[in-house]
Amino acid sequence: MNIYVFKANVYKYFITLYRAYPRSFFISSILTITYTLLYSYILYEYIFEGEVNSSFIGEAGTSNYMGYILVGVLVYSFTVSTLLNVSRSLITEKRIGTLESVMLAPYNRGLYFLAYMVAQTIHTFGELVFAIPILIVFKVKFAYFDLLSFIIVLSISLIAFLGLSLLLANLMLYTRDTYISQNTLFTVMFLICGINFPITYLPSFVSKISYLIPLTHSIKLFRGILLKGESLMIQMDSVVALILQGIIYSMIGFLTLKKVEKIALEKIGG
Image (cartoon, rainbow, N blue to C red; front, side, top):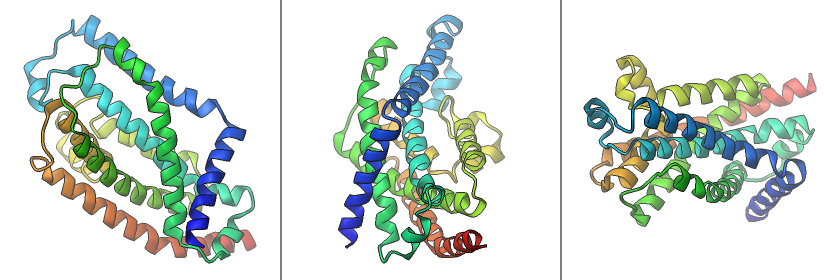
């Protein structure tokens, strides 16, 4: 039963994606990556004259500015895509009139969200394949690549993003709103999670808040293994923080889901 539900939701995701918006989401993601890199490239080449100062190198741990930006943008884009589609799953069910059926069905809620997470991960990696030529155009180079470390960081990042997605899904379902909640979160993440600059440039209280968001640790880990060649043992503090946040956010999300579902059903009935 649970495996059937898992497969059915993955299938439904791709059918909906293909029939409803076969090109718009893909083009939007690629353009977001391209425009952000183009803006950064213009700053780097024509304003900074292809150089970064010692302050940036000391805080970022690398002089590879375009690589630094690219890792941040790609991880951010991946995170937004994941959070957006996983968290919107229940509110979408409500809008199309299937929420009651979904809630009454005897299936594992975890597999329901995991199905959307897996489907979105496959979809996003498909988009990133088409972003590879962008690396050449903007002269981006990665000094290191450890496949095992990459897979480990990706896996624990997905767990953390799933937990955050559950919290966002509950908020959307409770408020019956998607745009304000999701756009507020995405804007905050873009500003304080170190996508375009080291978070040490932020006020101390803001940087402390950024460490509560899984994206901050995920970007730090990916930059470490791709730009600096750091092993995961060296970055164990970020690994542990990411795992703990994934567990804590997932537990809170699942514990509050039943309550939010009940409230949502009452609102439908009322």
